[in-house]
Image 1 (spheres, rainbow, N blue to C red):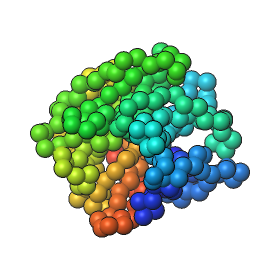
Image 2 (cartoon, rainbow, N blue to C red):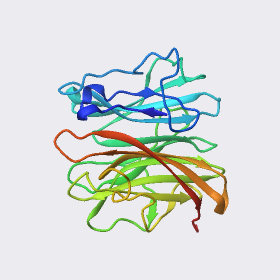
Image 3 (tube, helix red, strand yellow):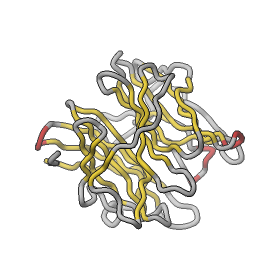
Image 4 (cartoon, helix red, strand yellow):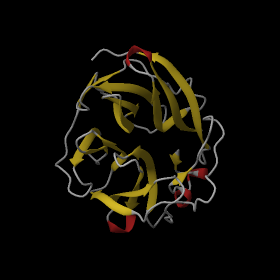
Length: 261
């Protein structure tokens, strides 16, 4: 698992870390790992967020994260490191940079090229799910905007997303929040044949009312099985109310998930 600790909402601690588990419940840093993977100071300096792990066609594990370069106009920079064992990681390399508020990146290999999904969160315009394509993680296409059915209601906005390609289909977990706050959001499942045209669940796969914490945040899924017997381990972060919220990671399992394309 890749994650960014956020004790007391402290940006200075929000750095990419890797932990391992044999049962999905008890986690610890692998022996020999130097942590964090990257260290930023937080306000008024840059800060990190939004980790993601993906297996590359080479068999290597790729870890990406977002760095918000606050001193340079809050430019968003996506960094990548590689590992064969989860302990020894390559030097970081910047694979994408752009204007502020490209967030919650999800890098996947389609079988032909790379796609970098995320949420465009520009001031003054509605949030949109977006993706770029690349053959080499250096030169990227112009942005593309997938279709999602059903789309948002007028009082909702996209916030975080996880996308994976599994058994020939695309699976997503999207975090939808009310327009005027980052609190009280819900998580919805998405599935697609091509990663461009998506079907989204009408009801939340996890709602904030039953999540164990009043506010949900960036989350991820681990798929198992196939077809109508598809199941997921869901790892979802949440935070408490208050001026210094407490953050934690939760786990649950969703079984026999079905969707018609």
